Image (cartoon, rainbow, N blue to C red; front, side, top):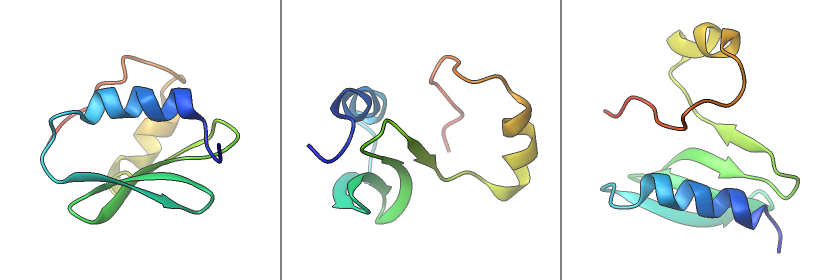
Length: 74
């Protein structure tokens, strides 16, 4: 297992039924792509790489870790 399977399963539940979502093994982990573009990736050490709108970066960094796991959908 090259990535955190529990975290990957949680992400699968979140994106289930979303149009254009696919999974691909890359960077030693598992990436979730939306219409072929990297959206989020799970690493082997439980890390999470999340692609966000650069305009929202500072506001997101000020939020405490965790949360509902539900974000705004476009």
